[in-house]
Amino acid sequence: MTDDASVVRRRAGAVFRSGAALRAATIEERAQWLAQAATTLAHEVHGKRNELSEATALSVPMVEWAARTTLGTIIEDSMLALARQAQRGSHRMRSPISMLSVILAGNVFTASVRSVIVPLLFGVPVLVKASSTETLFPVMLRDALVQTDSRLGAAMDLVVFAGGDVQCEDALAEPAEAVSVYGSDETVAAIGARLGDTPLIAHGHGVSAAYCGPEALDDAHVGNTIADLSLDICAYDQRGCLSPQVVYVAETVRWSAADFARRLAQEGLGPMSETLPRGRLPLSVGASQAQWRGIAEVEGTLIAGDTYAISVRDTQPMRWSPGFRNVTIAPVPGLDEAATALGQIGSSLKCVGADFASISKLRARLMQSPAPRAYACAIGEMQTPPFDAPADGRPVWHGLLRPSTRATHR
Image 1 (tube, rainbow, N blue to C red):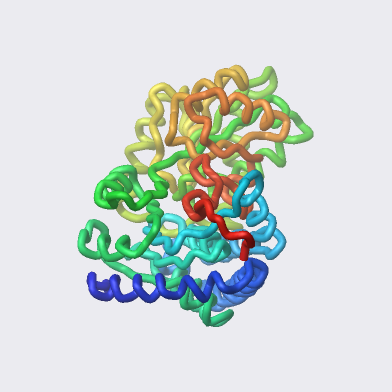
Image 2 (cartoon, one colour):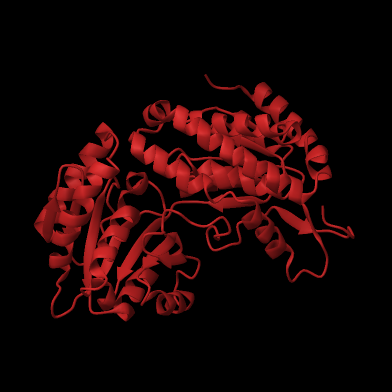
């Protein structure tokens, strides 16, 4: 069931009015409440894992893994450290905006956690437009907040309406001091064009990649490399913008990219099909997958299993996969060539995973490339960013704070 503009406007007004009570609490109180709500939600997810699996089209083990790793980052100390970081270096204390409206996408169900928790931590009430394809988890998050504290619960609400409903989108944005939008570049641009002077916090289309240097493939490390990389590929069934679509592999005398791909299939993606099974494959994705695999087989080497496929080929031209555990392994001589290829992706590059021996050099190269906003991390951690990880190259609190002349920070 979808909401009309009058419902959206009424709920937006109620969320806006809740801000004073939320900000009257100290940030320590809000951090404590939010950590408690995350614990409550984790218990609720376990009890509703089958319903969430049906709603998200992810397997039950994947739902449980996703909720556990995401909610596990909602820790009091981490939130308070983030709050201190946000104020560091400012000559004046920064005060929260009056209200944030958030438009979520439906591909990664846990994306609502940081989108809601971070604003509430800073005292910003939030109205969320949930994706019509997945409303169960945002409802569970709201209920956990309500159970924890009435002020916290009043400061977050949900609406559901079809994308492109201009009247509802206008009602969503009217009382907000900023609007955060997750979705395609077209969706972000269309909404931004109608916001006028209201700031837009854009989270548009993105892709991610990984790099495995020579040390990642030596005998002492290759087992961990395969395990970590398999998790990054399989998490959320490769549906999110943090999912690696291409892995640049530095070939060695002992290892070719094809050799590594075969071992990745046999020791990584294959076994993970049992521990973290892939969810159901939509018919539309099945058609795109068949096309992607067919071209991959013609252009290079294709290694396919029941629920995954690896294309071994040069990345020019790059053929982005439909996700759902279809990944490209691209041979490169070394880090310089990988960094050049990553730079060609440009501003759409969200995250780059790398082995520990390569990550510091890769970060330095990214800062000098056309893709400086990409978040770099160790492989195995691409899908589990810490609470304070930047979003689209900006601090996670971007757009939530403004300069203030207040003498104290609550």
